[in-house]
Amino acid sequence: MTTRCIKMGRRHFSAEFKLEAASLVLDQGYSVPEACASLNVGDTALRRWVKQARAEREGSVPVGHAPLTAEHRRIAELEAKVKRLEQEKAILKKATALFVEDETRHSR
Image (cartoon, rainbow, N blue to C red):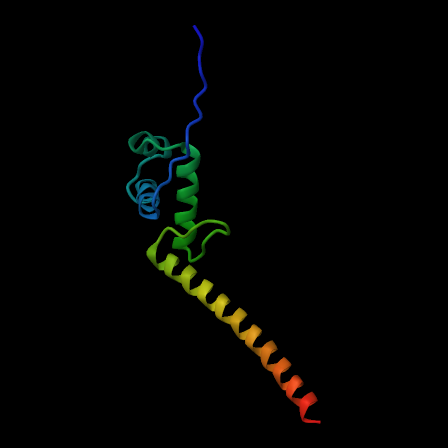
C-alpha cells in the first residue's frame, strides 16, 4: 500500500473570526486546547490570536499582524493614509523647490 502526501492549502480566517476565537479563551474561560477542538483550528494560530487580542486590548498591535478589532483596523488605515500624505507632501515640497530654482535661473 502506498501513501501519498497531499499538500494542504492554508486556511484564511477573517479578523472577526480570529477575535471571536480569542474571546473564547480570554473572556469565556475556554482553554486553548478546548477552543482549538471546538473551532477546528491549530494550537499555534489560536495562541497567536489570543496574544494579539491581548495586545490590542492594551492598546497596541504587534508589528506584522493585521489588526483584529475594527477600531485598530481603522487606526491602521488612518496611519497608512497619513504616511501616504506625508510622502506626497515631501514630493510636492521638492518639486516646488526645483520649480523655484528653475524660475530663478531663467529670470536672470
